[in-house]
Amino acid sequence: SVDVLEDMLEKFRVVTKERRDEEEQLQRQRAEQQAKINALLAQMQADGISPEELLSITPATTRSVKKRQPRPAKYRFIDLNGETKTWTGQGRTPKPIAQALATGKSLDDFLI
Image (spheres, rainbow, N blue to C red):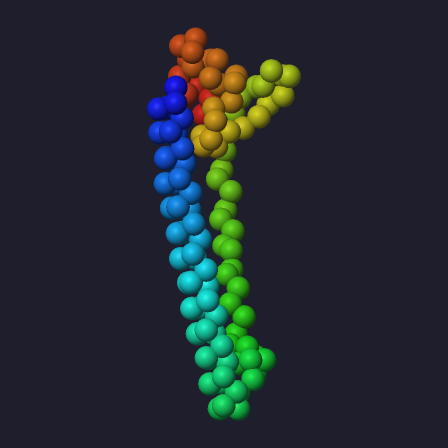
């Protein structure tokens, strides 16, 4: 029992040390990046360029999201409420179609 606890304690110490090392490395990377930013800002100020001026030159990069056409329906079926519905053939199979397929019908029976 004591051996198990000591083994767990040792594993915990190893994990804690690894986590501390990761945190220290992350802090060093952040400090290095901030130093680079400060150096670039100092260089820009020495050249007479303001950050606002630099940002006004670069165009705003907005990604245009292309809308794709909705797929046309391929199958027509009657749902559990008696309403006629359609299905494109993508995504989950509607329950009425799945039940009909289980009873031996073909998907071709539902084609539009």
